[in-house]
Image (tube, rainbow, N blue to C red; front, side):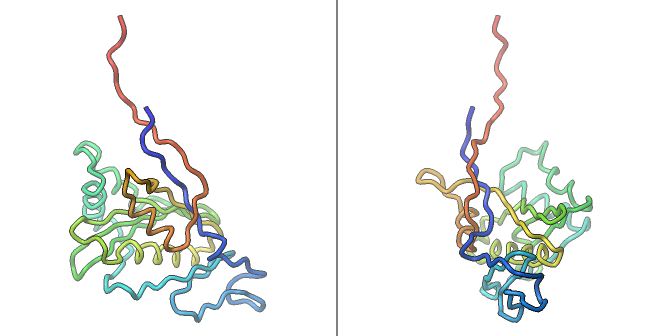
Length: 196
């Protein structure tokens, strides 16, 4: 059975500037002094991360349970698979983040780095704390860390925003300049009784 469509997103051409050389070198098109701008090896995205008072922290295994709980609660994972998101913490190439309001963790995000590419995942915000800029702050932080790691490409997938399905993650990414790279169906496995 086909479930909802998913869209893969990448930074848009409007917000990307191809650069003749690496950031900070002579002839670079990237102005690293501009507030809110993130300069990757081949791209620049400007977003205001000061719009929120939330603090984004990169986490380690000490916060694994909290990270897993935020993701599992938001995505309504059944108890049997709820611990899975936190199993990636501490693994090679993975970077995990939580957004805090004071001492309270309210949102999560992760990034997987592979060579010159980064993939964003596990974006979730506690329903009681939505519309406070947590996901924008998490996206901007991961973009900074991807740029620092020399990434040329950043991708993420999210549910598609349609008239029948609200997808705040999709809108957050589009607002920050990501564009749809492609759409794909999402399949759901349904166990059926064997035919006799």
